[in-house]
Image (cartoon, rainbow, N blue to C red):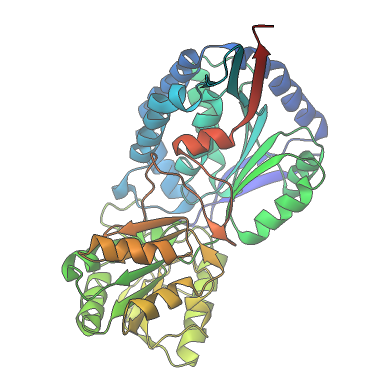
Length: 462
């Protein structure tokens, strides 16, 4: 009897979907189909592979109304914000425009009598282990460029967003993708580890926790599969003395609390120059207080439940620890009627009098809480920004581009923003440092990480 994966909705605690996990024999069939399909898929011209992906995007567009409702039930995002279609379109279209150039042969013409060039060769079977927080866009980051590069895909989605994998599989089916080129599978953790350790997967991309990344690295040990990891984050913002205060407040509140703070590059800690600090905190608290926590299916709701109660409980623990150590809470959570212990419904919270001895300023929260600290100057801000085991993004709020560049050069992070945050630009590489992971997605570098270089060295005159 196979294991059953259950999707518990954060909306009301009901079982929203359940699917049987594949057994060993079924997994072998999936891998066999992928291995059989890959050479023929790779032999197609890039333009044809791109066209299939564009057709799948059109299919996803046609499903969007249903997807928005499903996402609310699966992981709690309010329906008023729509789905993830905008980002999915932007990333797919960018990959489609740039695939031919990113994958083009590189000619070496400086040696008479020889024909020399480098090719980008697909890796083979790419397994995407996708997360629940942005379940379409995070998966698309790898799926689209991998397919365009000539790889085949095995997608294993998070249990919390089981239906997303099925939606993607349906989209590629509607696009007429050849059999075996894209396959969605449901696996237990043990089944996933067994597949990874079998040596039949050529590349794995995982987005999730640091612990999950370590488990995947361990499962892959000795297989020599390549690996891309986007793991934890504790992304900082620094508001300089010359920042546009209202603009910074509006964007940073959204960057901290959109998706209930469940964003890989969401703002989790803010450092503010002492000259702006009091006004910044007042404005930040006022705007945060205007959120409406509630059922994500209600159009008035601006803050939905977290995906699981245990995630909300972790944020509650961090907040209580900070308060015990002297932090000040600025949001009266009793004014949020839906905020209840033992549920995934959690009111937003803004903390001051915080320091780096508190978990809320050091360890990933991935929820609707943010700590704000006063700093004297750029140097103190930079020291605090870098005082973290993570490094995905950092944002600097200033009117001085040169200052932002100088601070950004020293910031230990994968992306530096100025006057924006919580955004992924498909033209720029998406990567992290330290415990945030390794590898890269999107831009031409993303294509390169989903292929291997192959050299051709021909003597044509002898």
